[in-house]
Length: 166
Image 1: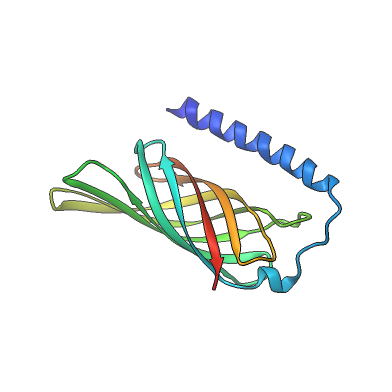
Image 2 (image 1 turned 90 degrees about the horizontal axis):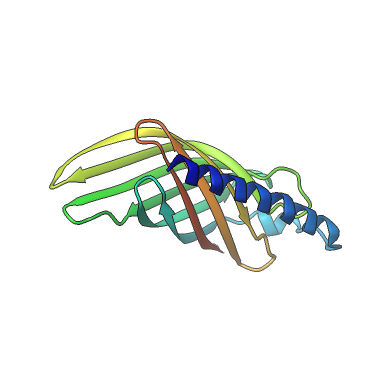
């Protein structure tokens, strides 16, 4: 399982290098501060490689500055039936100074709750995330994101989704 995670990370790193080069060759105007200053709410679908299950979730991206967003999210994992698994994430996204601001990194706290037949437990972990979000002047922002959850019950997941301006 660790070799799959390593391969996915290498592929994402390669895509980020190629995407950054391709964007640098374009001649477009930078988005205005107003375009990145609105909160966005959306949903996502993904896969957790360590739980081996699909997940469905929602997220809010609330800008603090043009480069820094509060980024709470919720994930529900589709585990087999008497069990349930969900998590709350309290993250911060940072957009390094790039031409279009599409790449972001971040981190925060993950609160995960699991139960089987009504008996459950929860744990708190550390999140590390990286992703690409298309920052258009329009109200819709598609994105893809990887998240490494470190702690008791560490895992790796990839999600993709859309966010809409509020």
